Image 1 (cartoon, rainbow, N blue to C red):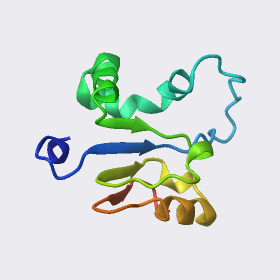
Image 2: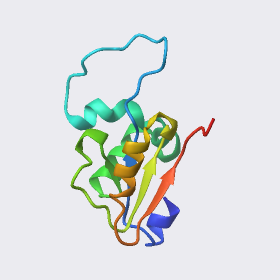
Image 3: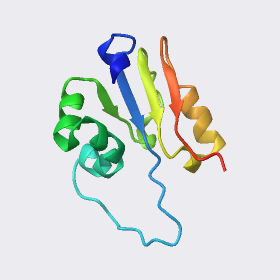
Image 4: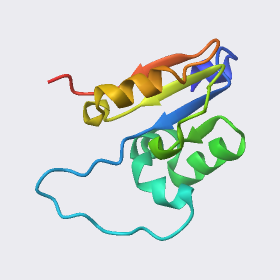
Length: 115
């Protein structure tokens, strides 16, 4: 967030694969908007920016964009931090797709367990 406040980047593009945990039952269909369906992925931001209200403000200010992998094709993210969490759950094909979305003055930050 400090890099955005300093003007180095315009926003964080947050991508978290919606892969379930092995041996844990799925919760089924989630009602609501795309944002409501992705809300469960935002725990890392809730912890750092003041909970749901902080995240809502960042989204409204254009400093945080939630992007489901399903809708990433055709996008190009300029002046952004593309932050992928739980990266161990993506395939090499998905990694290539994400890398190809990195636009001018953007960086890819991949948070994952490499083991």
